[in-house]
Amino acid sequence: MIPNSRPGALAAIVFDWDGTLMDSVGRIVHCLQRARAELAADPRSDDQMRDIIGLGVREATLTLYPGVDDGFVAAFTQAYRRYYLEIDVTPTPLFAEAEAVLSELAARGYLLGIATGKSRRGLDEALATTGLARFFDATATADEHPSKPHPGMLEYVLGRLGVAPDDAVMVGDSVYDLEMANNLAVRGIGVTHGVHDAARLQACRPAALIETLSELPALLSLGKH
Image 1 (cartoon, rainbow, N blue to C red):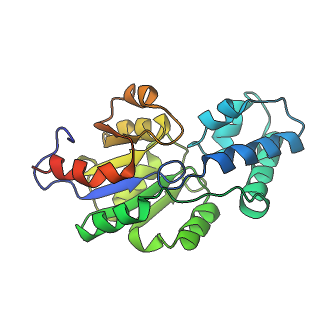
Image 2: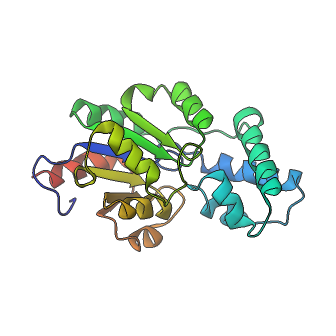
């Protein structure tokens, strides 16, 4: 159940993309490792790479390599995006229930949005490839707004939707998603099939945790009664 919700108040649901709607974690890690190797940077484990998914590429790079200069950040970003968008063929399927859940929520009349650490090019290509663009009323990316957990992109999406923070929820698989929601006083729902486990997500005090997206419609229905 979504606590503290007023009857009928929930108007908008904002989703993260990678690890929440799309199972792209493996490809992201692979491309980060290929970018690291290309630049001959110090090794980082797959777990370290996985842990920064959800941040913008600049913030992710600085987390992996504190103190590097802007030239390294720019080169790493360029290499990563080239591998992800043009070279790497690691599959990035939608989670099995994603399209059906979005269809049901849209049919119920919820406004749907995206706030993601992806670039605009990356998100637009993913939306076009999956055919999910039709469900979303507003989207924001990390190359247009400050990286999570800064609340800027979530605030922008809600502004475009015309929805107050009290009348929205943020659904994501990382602590960065839930911290962003907390920073705007938006209720967060953590999904445990992505980059961060239930214990880490729970530390962010989400309104609820779910194991799969298929649980979301029933959870929201409970919260409205």
